[in-house]
Length: 318
Image 1 (tube, rainbow, N blue to C red):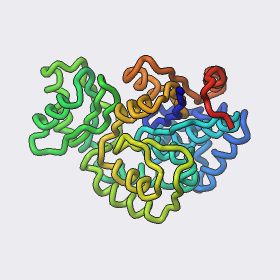
Image 2 (cartoon, rainbow, N blue to C red):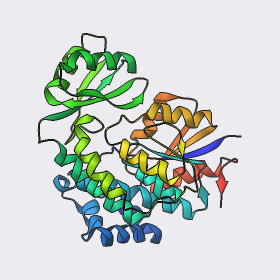
Image 3 (cartoon, one colour):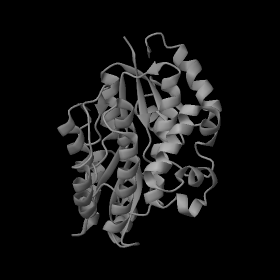
Image 4 (spheres, one colour):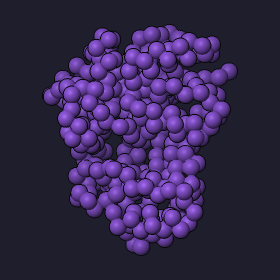
Protein backbone atom coordinates (compact mmCIF):
# COMPACT_ATOMS: atom_id res chain seq x y z
CA UNK A 1 0.00 0.00 0.00
CA UNK A 2 1.43 3.38 -0.99
CA UNK A 3 2.01 5.98 1.73
CA UNK A 4 2.46 9.74 2.04
CA UNK A 5 5.34 11.69 3.52
CA UNK A 6 5.32 15.34 4.56
CA UNK A 7 8.69 17.02 4.06
CA UNK A 8 9.87 20.36 5.44
CA UNK A 9 12.50 22.68 3.94
CA UNK A 10 15.55 24.01 5.70
CA UNK A 11 16.84 25.96 2.72
CA UNK A 12 14.42 28.22 0.92
CA UNK A 13 14.34 31.55 -0.85
CA UNK A 14 13.30 34.19 1.66
CA UNK A 15 10.88 36.76 0.33
CA UNK A 16 8.67 39.39 1.95
CA UNK A 17 5.15 38.04 1.89
CA UNK A 18 6.06 34.42 2.73
CA UNK A 19 3.16 32.86 4.62
CA UNK A 20 0.87 35.88 4.31
CA UNK A 21 -1.88 34.20 2.26
CA UNK A 22 -2.15 31.31 4.69
CA UNK A 23 -2.12 33.76 7.62
CA UNK A 24 -4.89 35.91 6.14
CA UNK A 25 -7.14 33.04 5.08
CA UNK A 26 -6.85 30.40 7.81
CA UNK A 27 -7.26 31.04 11.56
CA UNK A 28 -4.97 28.11 12.41
CA UNK A 29 -2.16 29.69 10.38
CA UNK A 30 -2.81 33.08 11.96
CA UNK A 31 -2.60 31.49 15.41
CA UNK A 32 0.71 29.89 14.43
CA UNK A 33 2.30 33.24 13.60
CA UNK A 34 0.85 34.76 16.76
CA UNK A 35 2.45 31.97 18.80
CA UNK A 36 5.80 32.65 17.12
CA UNK A 37 5.57 36.39 17.79
CA UNK A 38 4.75 35.75 21.44
CA UNK A 39 7.54 33.22 21.91
CA UNK A 40 10.21 35.44 20.35
CA UNK A 41 9.07 38.75 21.81
CA UNK A 42 9.00 40.52 18.46
CA UNK A 43 6.85 40.40 15.34
CA UNK A 44 8.33 37.61 13.24
CA UNK A 45 5.08 37.65 11.26
CA UNK A 46 5.62 41.25 10.13
CA UNK A 47 9.20 40.40 9.17
CA UNK A 48 7.92 37.47 7.08
CA UNK A 49 5.20 39.56 5.44
CA UNK A 50 6.92 42.93 4.99
CA UNK A 51 10.66 42.44 5.35
CA UNK A 52 13.01 44.16 4.93
CA UNK A 53 14.68 41.37 2.97
CA UNK A 54 18.10 42.18 4.46
CA UNK A 55 16.78 41.39 7.94
CA UNK A 56 14.82 38.35 6.78
CA UNK A 57 18.00 36.86 5.26
CA UNK A 58 19.90 36.97 8.56
CA UNK A 59 20.09 33.33 9.61
CA UNK A 60 18.79 33.96 13.14
CA UNK A 61 15.64 35.34 11.47
CA UNK A 62 15.58 33.03 8.46
CA UNK A 63 15.42 29.88 10.53
CA UNK A 64 12.37 30.77 12.68
CA UNK A 65 10.69 32.35 9.63
CA UNK A 66 10.92 29.16 7.56
CA UNK A 67 9.83 27.13 10.58
CA UNK A 68 6.77 29.34 11.16
CA UNK A 69 5.65 29.21 7.52
CA UNK A 70 6.19 25.43 7.42
CA UNK A 71 4.25 24.74 10.61
CA UNK A 72 1.46 27.09 9.52
CA UNK A 73 1.20 25.19 6.23
CA UNK A 74 1.20 21.86 8.06
CA UNK A 75 -1.53 22.97 10.45
CA UNK A 76 -3.71 24.16 7.57
CA UNK A 77 -3.34 20.83 5.76
CA UNK A 78 -3.92 18.92 9.00
CA UNK A 79 -7.06 20.98 9.66
CA UNK A 80 -8.38 19.65 6.35
CA UNK A 81 -8.16 16.14 7.79
CA UNK A 82 -4.88 14.92 6.34
CA UNK A 83 -2.21 13.13 8.36
CA UNK A 84 1.02 11.73 6.88
CA UNK A 85 2.55 8.30 7.37
CA UNK A 86 6.04 9.80 7.79
CA UNK A 87 7.62 13.23 8.22
CA UNK A 88 11.13 14.41 7.41
CA UNK A 89 12.90 17.74 7.22
CA UNK A 90 16.09 18.97 5.60
CA UNK A 91 18.43 20.44 8.27
CA UNK A 92 16.33 23.13 9.99
CA UNK A 93 13.28 21.37 8.54
CA UNK A 94 13.77 18.52 11.02
CA UNK A 95 12.45 20.87 13.72
CA UNK A 96 9.29 21.47 11.67
CA UNK A 97 8.94 17.71 11.20
CA UNK A 98 9.23 17.15 14.96
CA UNK A 99 6.55 19.77 15.63
CA UNK A 100 4.29 18.03 13.12
CA UNK A 101 4.98 14.67 14.78
CA UNK A 102 3.99 16.05 18.19
CA UNK A 103 7.49 15.58 19.61
CA UNK A 104 8.39 19.25 20.00
CA UNK A 105 6.33 22.21 21.17
CA UNK A 106 6.13 24.86 18.44
CA UNK A 107 7.08 27.80 20.66
CA UNK A 108 10.06 25.86 22.02
CA UNK A 109 11.06 25.07 18.43
CA UNK A 110 10.87 28.72 17.34
CA UNK A 111 13.13 29.83 20.18
CA UNK A 112 15.53 26.92 19.62
CA UNK A 113 16.02 27.60 15.93
CA UNK A 114 16.48 31.34 16.45
CA UNK A 115 19.30 30.52 18.84
CA UNK A 116 20.54 27.83 16.45
CA UNK A 117 20.86 30.42 13.71
CA UNK A 118 22.59 32.86 16.05
CA UNK A 119 25.04 30.22 17.28
CA UNK A 120 25.85 29.10 13.74
CA UNK A 121 26.48 32.66 12.61
CA UNK A 122 28.75 33.34 15.58
CA UNK A 123 30.70 30.08 15.26
CA UNK A 124 32.84 31.34 12.39
CA UNK A 125 34.03 34.90 11.68
CA UNK A 126 32.26 36.45 8.69
CA UNK A 127 33.95 35.61 5.39
CA UNK A 128 36.15 32.81 6.72
CA UNK A 129 33.75 29.97 5.91
CA UNK A 130 31.86 29.01 2.77
CA UNK A 131 29.68 26.40 1.07
CA UNK A 132 29.46 25.23 -2.53
CA UNK A 133 27.21 22.93 -4.53
CA UNK A 134 28.96 20.36 -6.70
CA UNK A 135 26.79 19.03 -9.53
CA UNK A 136 27.46 15.85 -11.46
CA UNK A 137 29.81 14.05 -9.08
CA UNK A 138 28.72 11.30 -6.70
CA UNK A 139 29.41 11.22 -2.96
CA UNK A 140 32.64 9.23 -3.07
CA UNK A 141 34.17 11.48 -5.74
CA UNK A 142 33.19 14.61 -3.83
CA UNK A 143 34.68 13.18 -0.64
CA UNK A 144 37.93 12.52 -2.52
CA UNK A 145 37.77 16.07 -3.86
CA UNK A 146 37.45 17.42 -0.30
CA UNK A 147 40.46 15.43 0.88
CA UNK A 148 42.55 16.75 -1.99
CA UNK A 149 41.43 20.38 -1.81
CA UNK A 150 41.35 20.59 1.98
CA UNK A 151 45.14 20.92 2.36
CA UNK A 152 44.89 20.71 6.13
CA UNK A 153 41.86 23.01 6.42
CA UNK A 154 38.29 22.01 7.25
CA UNK A 155 36.44 20.85 4.14
CA UNK A 156 33.79 18.14 4.03
CA UNK A 157 30.48 17.02 2.58
CA UNK A 158 27.61 19.00 4.16
CA UNK A 159 24.46 18.04 2.24
CA UNK A 160 23.89 14.86 0.26
CA UNK A 161 20.95 16.33 -1.61
CA UNK A 162 20.61 13.92 -4.54
CA UNK A 163 22.74 11.63 -6.67
CA UNK A 164 23.59 14.67 -8.78
CA UNK A 165 23.97 17.37 -6.10
CA UNK A 166 26.37 17.33 -3.16
CA UNK A 167 27.06 20.43 -1.06
CA UNK A 168 30.44 20.95 0.63
CA UNK A 169 31.37 23.25 3.51
CA UNK A 170 34.51 24.44 5.24
CA UNK A 171 37.03 27.22 5.28
CA UNK A 172 36.55 29.74 2.47
CA UNK A 173 39.97 29.12 0.94
CA UNK A 174 39.46 25.35 0.90
CA UNK A 175 36.02 25.70 -0.71
CA UNK A 176 37.52 27.97 -3.38
CA UNK A 177 40.19 25.36 -4.13
CA UNK A 178 37.53 22.65 -4.31
CA UNK A 179 35.46 24.63 -6.81
CA UNK A 180 38.47 25.06 -9.09
CA UNK A 181 39.45 21.40 -8.72
CA UNK A 182 35.91 20.12 -9.30
CA UNK A 183 35.94 21.58 -12.79
CA UNK A 184 38.94 19.42 -13.66
CA UNK A 185 37.40 16.28 -12.10
CA UNK A 186 34.34 16.11 -14.32
CA UNK A 187 31.79 18.11 -12.34
CA UNK A 188 29.02 19.64 -14.44
CA UNK A 189 29.13 22.74 -12.23
CA UNK A 190 30.58 23.86 -8.93
CA UNK A 191 28.85 26.90 -7.47
CA UNK A 192 29.61 29.02 -4.43
CA UNK A 193 26.42 29.32 -2.36
CA UNK A 194 25.14 32.62 -0.92
CA UNK A 195 25.12 31.50 2.71
CA UNK A 196 26.22 33.31 5.84
CA UNK A 197 28.14 30.42 7.44
CA UNK A 198 29.58 26.95 6.61
CA UNK A 199 26.79 24.78 7.99
CA UNK A 200 27.06 21.05 8.76
CA UNK A 201 30.81 20.82 9.12
CA UNK A 202 33.39 20.74 11.94
CA UNK A 203 33.57 24.55 12.01
CA UNK A 204 30.14 24.47 13.69
CA UNK A 205 31.49 22.74 16.82
CA UNK A 206 30.93 25.71 19.13
CA UNK A 207 27.37 26.09 17.82
CA UNK A 208 26.77 22.40 18.47
CA UNK A 209 27.93 22.72 22.08
CA UNK A 210 25.80 25.80 22.75
CA UNK A 211 22.72 24.25 21.15
CA UNK A 212 23.22 21.02 23.08
CA UNK A 213 22.97 22.96 26.35
CA UNK A 214 19.76 24.61 25.17
CA UNK A 215 18.19 21.37 23.98
CA UNK A 216 18.93 19.63 27.26
CA UNK A 217 16.32 21.92 28.84
CA UNK A 218 13.67 21.52 26.11
CA UNK A 219 10.78 19.13 26.75
CA UNK A 220 10.45 16.43 24.07
CA UNK A 221 7.90 13.68 23.58
CA UNK A 222 7.91 10.39 21.66
CA UNK A 223 6.69 11.02 18.13
CA UNK A 224 3.12 10.23 17.07
CA UNK A 225 4.37 10.01 13.47
CA UNK A 226 7.73 8.46 12.48
CA UNK A 227 10.37 11.14 11.86
CA UNK A 228 13.25 10.38 9.50
CA UNK A 229 16.48 11.76 10.96
CA UNK A 230 18.99 13.76 8.90
CA UNK A 231 22.06 12.19 10.47
CA UNK A 232 20.99 8.54 10.35
CA UNK A 233 18.50 8.52 7.45
CA UNK A 234 16.21 6.28 9.48
CA UNK A 235 13.07 6.68 11.55
CA UNK A 236 13.42 7.90 15.14
CA UNK A 237 10.80 8.23 17.84
CA UNK A 238 12.31 8.13 21.34
CA UNK A 239 13.18 11.31 23.23
CA UNK A 240 16.87 10.34 23.47
CA UNK A 241 17.06 9.68 19.73
CA UNK A 242 15.40 13.00 18.91
CA UNK A 243 17.66 15.09 21.13
CA UNK A 244 20.78 13.28 19.93
CA UNK A 245 19.80 13.74 16.29
CA UNK A 246 19.23 17.49 16.65
CA UNK A 247 22.61 17.93 18.34
CA UNK A 248 24.60 15.78 15.92
CA UNK A 249 23.09 17.34 12.80
CA UNK A 250 24.84 20.69 13.48
CA UNK A 251 28.25 19.31 12.46
CA UNK A 252 27.12 16.29 10.42
CA UNK A 253 26.07 16.04 6.78
CA UNK A 254 22.39 16.07 5.87
CA UNK A 255 21.77 12.64 4.33
CA UNK A 256 18.78 13.73 2.30
CA UNK A 257 19.21 11.28 -0.58
CA UNK A 258 19.25 8.33 1.82
CA UNK A 259 16.35 9.79 3.81
CA UNK A 260 14.17 9.99 0.70
CA UNK A 261 15.28 6.49 -0.34
CA UNK A 262 14.33 5.23 3.14
CA UNK A 263 10.86 6.71 2.71
CA UNK A 264 10.46 5.23 -0.76
CA UNK A 265 11.62 1.84 0.56
CA UNK A 266 8.83 2.15 3.15
CA UNK A 267 6.28 2.69 0.37
CA UNK A 268 6.00 6.50 0.39
CA UNK A 269 4.88 7.48 -3.09
CA UNK A 270 3.57 11.01 -2.52
CA UNK A 271 5.80 13.71 -1.01
CA UNK A 272 4.13 16.91 0.21
CA UNK A 273 6.54 19.81 0.82
CA UNK A 274 5.27 22.25 3.46
CA UNK A 275 6.88 25.69 3.61
CA UNK A 276 8.36 28.32 1.31
CA UNK A 277 9.51 27.18 -2.11
CA UNK A 278 9.89 23.85 -3.90
CA UNK A 279 13.56 23.04 -3.27
CA UNK A 280 12.88 19.66 -1.69
CA UNK A 281 10.30 18.70 -4.31
CA UNK A 282 12.95 19.20 -6.96
CA UNK A 283 15.48 17.11 -5.05
CA UNK A 284 12.97 14.29 -4.53
CA UNK A 285 12.31 14.22 -8.26
CA UNK A 286 16.06 14.00 -8.91
CA UNK A 287 16.30 11.06 -6.53
CA UNK A 288 13.35 9.11 -7.98
CA UNK A 289 11.14 10.32 -10.81
CA UNK A 290 8.60 7.58 -10.19
CA UNK A 291 7.18 9.30 -7.10
CA UNK A 292 4.81 12.26 -6.99
CA UNK A 293 5.50 15.60 -5.33
CA UNK A 294 3.45 18.64 -4.43
CA UNK A 295 3.91 21.62 -2.12
CA UNK A 296 1.96 24.01 0.12
CA UNK A 297 3.08 27.61 0.67
CA UNK A 298 0.12 29.76 -0.41
CA UNK A 299 -3.53 29.49 -1.47
CA UNK A 300 -2.96 28.22 -5.01
CA UNK A 301 -0.43 25.57 -4.02
CA UNK A 302 -2.70 24.47 -1.16
CA UNK A 303 -5.61 23.90 -3.52
CA UNK A 304 -3.41 21.93 -5.91
CA UNK A 305 -2.03 19.81 -3.06
CA UNK A 306 -5.47 19.12 -1.61
CA UNK A 307 -6.71 17.97 -5.02
CA UNK A 308 -3.77 15.59 -5.34
CA UNK A 309 -4.08 14.28 -1.79
CA UNK A 310 -7.82 13.76 -2.19
CA UNK A 311 -7.03 11.59 -5.17
CA UNK A 312 -4.68 9.42 -3.15
CA UNK A 313 -6.96 6.69 -1.83
CA UNK A 314 -4.34 5.30 0.54
CA UNK A 315 -3.88 8.65 2.29
CA UNK A 316 -4.55 8.65 6.03
CA UNK A 317 -7.36 11.03 6.93
CA UNK A 318 -8.43 11.97 10.42
